[in-house]
Image (cartoon, rainbow, N blue to C red; front, side):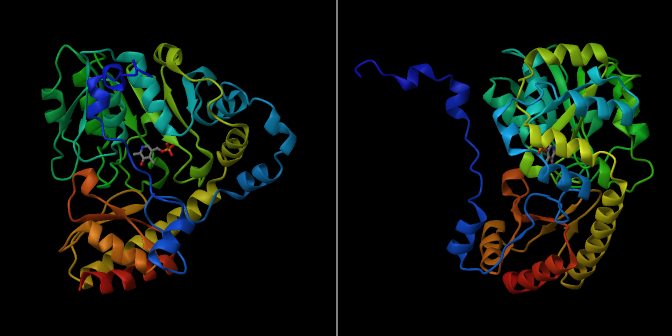
Length: 368
Ligand SMILES: *Cc1c(COP(=O)(O)O)cnc(C)c1O
């Protein structure tokens, strides 16, 4: 292999890009840290699992169907969404998790020299997909822990294609209200694509929180993301989607990978859509768990950042990776936040009371 030259084949933006290292499987972690059980409070999963109707759909999926390609464009699922939201089925694009639809949008609109705008401390995948696609990322610092609308508008130039807003924001829980989102969309005035990532939509309790879906008829440049990984407990099956005006979605469809969403995920998500009981039960659990954590953290004099969503952040008097390791030894897995540009912070998923108590007990022993 005399002529093998990896260096010359790789674009510089790929060489610069640090690949993400996922955490090890639970059983490996349990062995490594010597704990007997693991509370997963790191990924904002729903400990109640999928709604009962989804569980039934998963159980009744015939193994023989594994040999057959799924619907390439999640036909029945999109029709279900269309009924639920009063839109046309063609206004939805379904992906292998909302993660995949991020790249559909970036690939549809951005070429070399273009840029996207987002915040410095938010869900990092917008930034990562742009970076490893060779697209410039303009990151605007959060202001009072929230997306800074004016700061983002100020960063726009002729090559700006997309602005990404995470609403409510992961990991700070802050959100733009109706008025602020509308004002922002009016300022952009259709000249750029605005993505509103509503991964935590179903958890939001605030009355003035805007439903992006209800704005897409009015703003043809608006894309809304939703996922079945958080509220609907289907993270392991990987299904999420985007919604927007017909013209916009037709444009994005060009970069859509067909068959990337498997048949089990499509059936399970379809069955989940109508289950409002599951939603209420999960919300109650999150409300109770959050109230408990806030009270306990206050008693411990540990500052926290908490808003909408099934998570909160804790500010530690020491390194987050050190506390992570100490918590792991006690069977509690949280998310270190240094990678989100919040050094010395951890993010904790709100879960059942038993897990919340285990977390607080372990935390007390870890920070002293
Ligand atoms: C979890 C999450 C997603 C993506 O979830 P998928 O599992 O890929 O559907 C997208 N955005 C935010 C803000 C998230 O927290």
